[in-house]
Length: 482
Image (tube, rainbow, N blue to C red; front, side, top):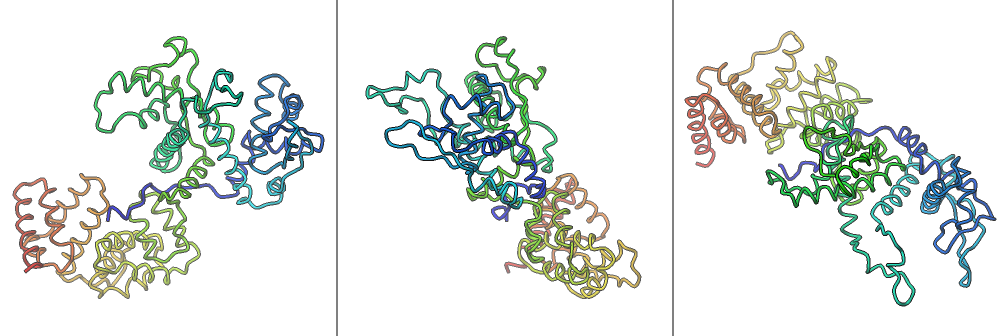
């Protein structure tokens, strides 16, 4: 079953409306919109669509910035986003001209005011793509060093591998995404830049990093420091840069932070809710399985129970609540119970999540639950559910059903890969409550009986009882194979 599990835990995304508001508030997109409204027929652009140099001071003032070098740089960045997202349409210069005039508003500009939240997010994603490309572009100090004998820029002189640069930044953002969704998708805790850099450089099986590896981590930190400064204005991340004083203290590249140092000085980064949305979208486009809470709402009960099988508990509960919303309780309970049946490897976990889903339906599910009291696969589950709610007239289960439910419960817990100590407590509690447990359980007609007994033999902390479990596993295996 492991190969069927999602690559990543599910993310809890904000609504499209909330994300669209965040997109419009992102400084770079907001600046691009202002420049798109500022531009007009007299606005001059270069051959690549960039603003003419003498237009930059006015563009900076349109953004509320000083018309100095920094203001011009910000205006240039915002203008590139306006062009790349289609907020402005720039004319093609004539062959014999370096510049052209006649900029017009692009079709996408109207979408930001009259379109849906999805339209706004589509424009923002185009902006994210443009900024991502900027973040992976080469940096050079002297353009003259790149000019070849023919007077043209020779890119081959750069120590730059575009595919490697893209893969590196995508890997970093993927790791940042995983760290965020693994803590429930809240992203409350920022990630130290040294830890993020190390996640890309230090091998998983390496104990103490070598000096060479630490140097690579330092280089990656500075690379990421530049890249996150580029990515922050589009609203992807909240970033606290590396303290520039460290460069003076340590040289051009600071060594990664030690345990007793203030790690915040080495950079802290956190994905915004908009950043989660953006990175997940890129992952989906690349074919990565990146689920989101709510993906299963419109699907059937079997897809729901299979889908939440390996979700963290909070995400599973949220997904089930969304699925139940708007469904009639008894009909939903019947659909869940029908989906929980089966003898395949995933069925015990489906039944466990069915029981949890029924608890969210509440007392209204009782008619549907009583309908399966005689069912060999669901009768035990139904009795537990009714007993937990203090229902009257719950028939006592036959002994065979008791042991079948015990096997099914342990099989589900084994499939979940949950807390080992909790699983051991469950196993020891079941064996302690029933006299002659192993004399009876190996005869249970459940497809997981032998596997469960073998696991009990590995996990039970009492060596004598563990040995009994292994003997019973052998009997169960012999019975099914004989």
